[in-house]
Length: 219
Image (cartoon, rainbow, N blue to C red; front, top):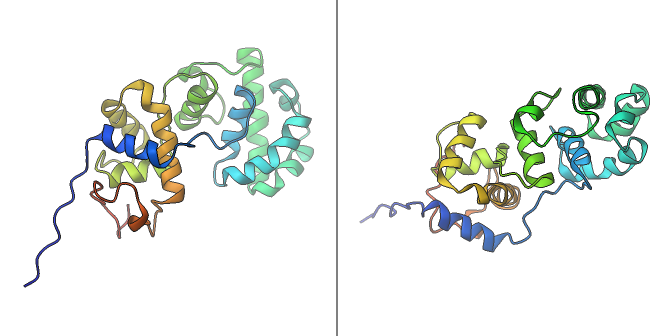
């Protein structure tokens, strides 16, 4: 007689966070940077490409344009040549010049340590702003990228696909001091184990506690 598989109930969020911390003790921002300016630029460039590829381009980029003032006055053709390996290089070059111009005009060339001020900058959304706040300034923020959104739905923490809603709902589950590292751990886990199409459930540290919502479907 066939017996149905027992229902898997997700552990409390803090337990999941602890398991992820044990599985990914090296979780961190994988964009190489030395300051808030470099992190902001690198995060903007990371859209539609990988952190690895961004890290291959940024050493030359920051050697040529070490601050917002030099980037704001960059020759677009020369900047496009530096960014060419990333794809969408023309669009990204124009975005960086516009962003740098906003930094110079509105903040004296410095990156503001404030969410509202960051999202007011050209081309900066909440995800980018939270990356910068958490990793350059130590200000708590939850970065909802595709990995964080997907894992949050699979774990039953949210049903929403709206990053702003996901951010708000995760903020209710975890204390602010955990927000930055929680984001890193979820991103690490999403990149290495909990893939979008074929999650490695048999190798997952959460195998016994994850309800696997949407696994095998569009999650």
